[in-house]
Image (cartoon, rainbow, N blue to C red):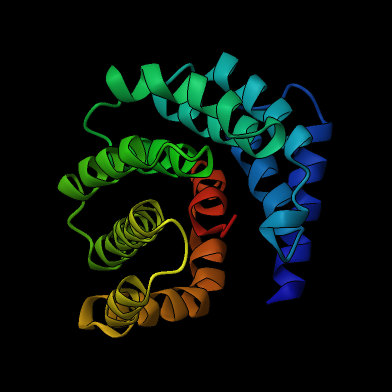
Length: 212
């Protein structure tokens, strides 16, 4: 309901503009900033980072730090975010699935496929929710297929009939077909998940559902 969203954005803006700003006002203005754009790619990440800076001072928790790191990754690139997430995933958030999922995605974007696979595996170990597990399995399968393609080019020095046949088999295999179906399904539900995500996890959702 766009009218209710607009009303919520206006109310959050008013609350933030009237000091003193309560601690719950900051997550509200973060949510309002996310919701004001229909697409995650249009989000003003610099503004989001600024709000998380405020929230981290008011509520210095590792979850807030993680979401701030994700916002920085979206603003400044995956390497910047990874530098902040690594110590969190190895420390306070060692058993928090979203920390490992976010770390995996940043590693994937940087081309560190083996490390990304290990991080996705760890996130999968910690995840019991069905849709999340399916999504992570899809990412793991993508990495496996990418490795197979690279391996084929290395052995054949380019195009290789036997490797192309093997890749065709992978493409139409039940696992790969399931991953493709999942990807299509996730595209359909991502808007709903984006709308329902809490303000503290909206940045994570933007990162994980991005195809870049």
